[in-house]
Image 1 (tube, rainbow, N blue to C red):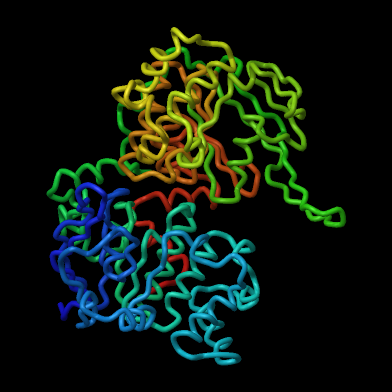
Image 2: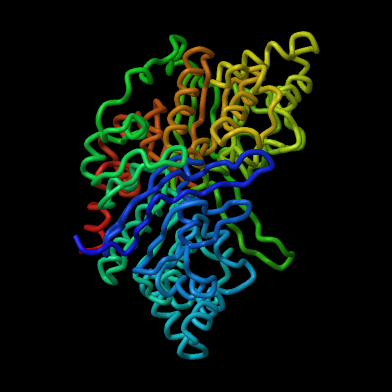
Length: 551
């Protein structure tokens, strides 16, 4: 292999505090060679993004580089002046940030944002800048008409492709991609990766790809470095990592990846003895419809988010509701939990349908019996209140516990969802916990009222891979121990297959396929379902490249 274009030696990053410095990155060393796809993998807090920020000299205070070398294209980044480093960005190395939503300015058109980069770094203006902007959109297969669009008018996948186009504006030889597919549904995620691979083949740039999703990088990276607690614990060719790796942490990550192929884990095949599909369902949805009207008296535009769907869920059953972003999944969740009013149809809980169209008059009993776990563990908890407060409010509201019985009940509940000791976690505030711990609190809150059904809306999509598995196992455990019924909403068929007895596939607000989890995975009927299965299966990149004609 040729000379490295990136050479990191003994990199250390410290966060300066009032007490002792916190060593966030310790003695990180790796090389990346020209044309290589190098993956940096680790869970949240492992130090991945800190390494990138140090390389680009964009560390936020109070972080400092305490030791090490960063050599990019034979230039010593840490010894260079600030102006030299600014000149190096975009021209020699660019970065695709984690969230396309936050990376793009919401008040500027796509044209203005591309022009700004071209003017600043290449002195291109007017028609010349316009021509280059059109070339960049063509590279990522976006119509030129979108140049005058604003970010909110684009889908998540389109925004991410535009961010990639901007990163390519000056044609740098190295591109850093920091979690570029986070929050995208599985089909769009795979399409973005296929487009990156295609562009790399055409343009020959080198990629440093940062992610917490090891399964993703196993499909297309050349080499991988696994990070844990600020250190690289394993660095090897992707085929050796794929074979199982050497370090225990690598093995743990690989073991935490749900799969749409092979055998299901035996522990999740158990079902409550009470599960009887011949009995009347605990929840039945009939001809449910939701139409959103665009604001404004003269605006007659309507969006049919959910269109005449019907399904049943039985006591003790876990049903997966699967579809890409915009398919109507979250709208169904809000309708079932009565957070929004339907435009038509009926919802029956234990055979009863009480004022389904009157959300303001939803019976308190229904609120108790149907609970929801939201996607975002950060946004679902109030930052100014303790865990005890979050769990006690519903219990006070429904008069289920008093001052004497409240604390022991909450402690027991926290320990059931894996937060031990419960006394310690009851006193914590949301900012004092990890994302996985916060999501466990959200699950505990949903379970506190002993509901008949829990609606879990993408409860694992914002979590690290090993934490995702732990959360899935909580639902599986609660189903067995508490006869819990779950509507599990996700875009990932592998996760749905791991947990659910039955899977319902939603597209454009309509149910297109429904079957037993194994049967649906093994023998999907609809083309869209086949896409979802392929996107969740090993070798998905080959499938996409065949479909798109990428060489």
